[in-house]
Amino acid sequence: MKTANQRPGVTITDSKTTVLLWAPKANKVALKLQHTQKELQLEQQPYGYWQLETDEIKEGDRYKFVLDGEKELPDPASLHQPDTVHGPSEVVNVQAFNWTDTEWNNTALQDYIIYELHAGTFTADSTFAGIESKLDYLVELGINAIEIMPVAQFPGNRNWGYDGVFPYAVQNSYGGAKGLQQLVDACHKKGLAVVLDVVYNHMGPEGNYFGEFGPYFTDKYNTPWGNAINFDDAGCDAVRHYFIENVLMWFRDFHIDALRMDAVHAIKDFSAEHILSEIRSRVNELMQQTGKKHYLIIECDLNDTRFLNSQEVGGFAMDSQWIDEFHHALRLAAGGEPTGYYSDFSGVADLAKSYRDAYVYDGQYSPHRDKHFGIKAENNPGEQFIVFSQNHDQVGNRMLGERSSELFSFEMQKVMAGAVLTAPYLPMLFMGEEYSEPHRFMYFVSHTDAELAEAVRKGRKAEFAAFHAQGEAPDPVDEKTFIDSQLQWDIIAQQPHQTMLSFYKALIQLRKTLPALHHLNRKHIWTDVNEEQNTLILRRKHYVQEALILMNFSGNKQSLSLPDTAQSWKKQFDSADVQWNGPQAAADEVNGGGTVELQPESFIIYINE
Image (cartoon, rainbow, N blue to C red; front, side):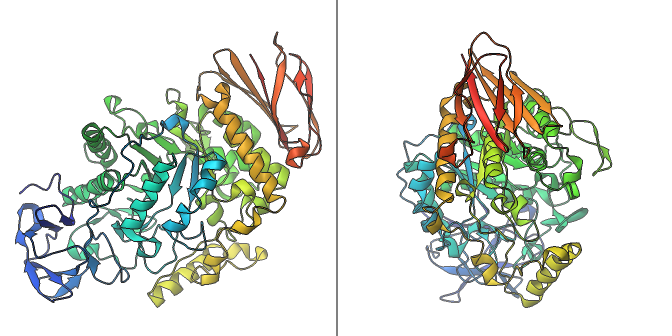
């Protein structure tokens, strides 16, 4: 039998139901149907696989695997866990959904404007249907891609998603597999691409039964979450197959447009072909078969272009990556505290470097890491980098989960938005920032194991023991922490939130329509920094059009000189305009070589053609 193109778990086709399980430790394997208690025996196959073809299993049946007549366990490739991570798995025919998106073509990556959201806190419903109810709002905002934080089944109903233990099962409380398919179909109708955040570097602790089946983990490497997933040790072939098929399932059966793979620097693999490169090759094969385009996006803390470079030059050919260093430099420029990893950054000078070079650290010494770090990203196009002023990590991993709306003034929030949306990279917003949501986004879990819940609670307190002057770390297990992290849709019509939302809409529209901002040409970028003034000038060009973005991160008015050009500079956007609750707009037109007085904490966009 061949497993190369067969998804693990229970798969329904027109003619039969196929069961595939990798359990090399077992001497006997059966599938036990919960409603009849009947056990169907699987046949042993090479390399530790067990298989069954039958017409006795139907959609909606609940089951567990029985190993050696003793252990009854849920399916590691379960598609639905209706009764928690410890209960039986349920058969779902994910290929039976009635799609209406046959005309959909994925948005070109260089055009992506991404909106990161969490299904549980985006609306009070905490469901995919709740997200669907807000799609018109997102379209009107101007974004064209939503990025959904992980939805793999986790314990309870409240979790960031990074404690998932069933990578194939969609969280039951959000709406399960059918709910996600319905949301994707609805998004495509509205012209929105869907990015799904997936976790291939670790599994959560509760409900993690993988070790009972086989060597899914290896003690060759340690990660922040314990032993690494086994991508290159004995028995790794089946583990690689498991995750590759998971990638293909999201694209093929759920019509997901892109995956964002969490912390790939924690994926340990010294195989001749790295797992990311193999995923790339298999996705390429799928795209050739279907004619549909899918992107692979990574979070990576290595500043290593090998992850982005083509396979022809030994790279892994990922399409894009989050770039935290832009965020860190921007936060420092805006007046954030230089503590922890922020201590490596100097503010406007490093922000200017990130505009030019993507990575701030591309070979120089990093004091925080105490080593030389990174490599230059000279030949990587702008769409290979994603920038933001906040995201779930940078907000939620603060002790109190404060957003920029609480940490920075209204004017500075606008400057930070301008810094992101004028960058020569893909911009990403974090849900609620577009109207200055004041609710914090805190860390929350709902482990059903009381001991584990208490351990998480204590661990969170210990992590921030040095910060008691700021108060107590919120209890991650308390449901109130979760509810207090939800967006407040009723405040959008109030001030100043209404003004901020209008501001974001106008700025996003300008990015889309101004060629010098829209095209991600990294070859025609110039910056001019005045660290004493805390000002930065970003100059971008596309053919005859030049855009000039003047940014003042200081609390004082600053005079900046414009480049000496034959054409005058015409203003396109001014964050200090009174229509955005600013103090005073600058002149609409300035001659080349002239000066502009920038209001405190403001930015202006000029063009000449």
